[in-house]
Length: 256
Image 1: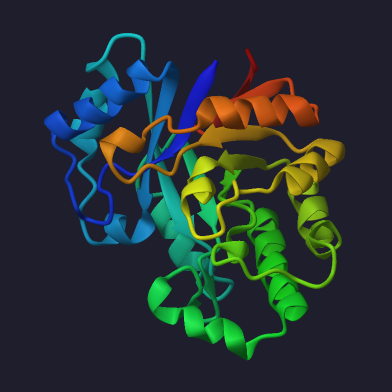
Image 2 (image 1 turned 135 degrees about the horizontal axis):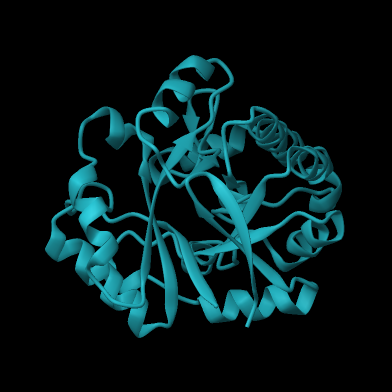
């Protein structure tokens, strides 16, 4: 079974939650054999009023054979816990993704700020990133940890083995019983590698951390992109099940 639990029907405000747009996303999912689609816009668009919950609810019956889940991708900031809590309580979401896009005020995955990588020792940067990832898991706010090695987006690599640097996050995610996603969008970013890497995914598997699949689509033709490839990689490292969500409750389905 294929699922896609990280889909942005708003893109970066390049589209809207019209029924026509939502249907295009879902029809692409059906074409690629995806059985469940999780729409999860960035939390800043929730605050700005761009979520159209009535249309998202109507989308549940737009395309036969494709189930819709309504979620939220929320940036984790250690100094904004009450704000995060308020956002995830704004609607009865099916799932919430916790993502690290910022270290302090630096949006490290934005191309306009790539020069700031030069200010860091790469081992220290990775350690800072994984501390935040561990904190996000411990917060209890999230069902899924998004793109769990996004810090590599422009190809910057640590000197130390990444699994060693990620170990505090691996332990925290396991203890918090949170899911991580295999996010295929990394194959289409400068780094040219899935999030997480196969090496890191194998470590998650060894720790017993459950997974789900996502494309991180920002336009309809990206829905379901490379999910079969991701599923096969998951199977190769030892996974046999995928996580799905409804009403913030997790169910496991067989990888097939």
